[in-house]
Length: 274
Image (tube, rainbow, N blue to C red):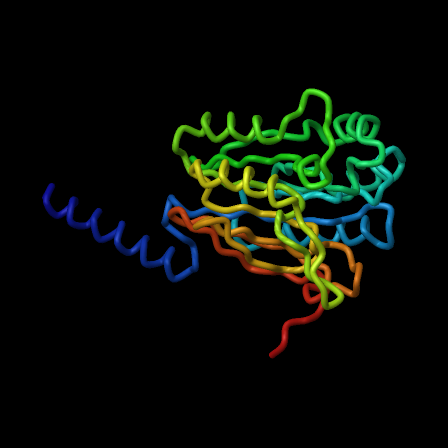
């Protein structure tokens, strides 16, 4: 009788796995999802309204997500305007998961770094931080001082990142910042990225750790670049600048590899095609 029960229990588990697999639910504990949004530019055009739409789309996703990461340019050079900040944060308030922020060049301004740095911290928290999801270390950081060659008091991005990669102690790392270090291509020409000296020093730090992927924004379009063997994903914007279509990304981390699906916000308003 005991042997029969054991065999029956085994068949129940097999049936459960088949049912879950058929329903599209992953039984892989090494797999999880998160969302990237970028370049909301609150206070310009309909950035806040589109953020509100993005939140509705995220909350309705058919898979559980661990968090949302905003990869910068939250604001539109107006971080000292409290009402705009409040409206944007109110649009994000219904999110059902944690959100992490990365400052961009339109958040902390190179023309007034100290004051806008303080305003950013008051509204969104530290400019560099970490979190851990499912054994993966997420590193969020401000890199504009490297790209635009200025300093913030008490903040050295390269030293800070070096320390965080050491603290990760070999665990997989996903790194988030705003502007890729590569040249920007638009209007049929290339625009300089980071200086070669800074870029090479930065990339030496990256390839010495356990970084599995880099996730950025800034370019307002999707691109893929490589830092050695590390993929660098450039995400789409929430805003419509340069006639770009508002979008967000659903990422899936699976066994050390990262893939994504792009979700266009305006497509989500249309009925599905038959």
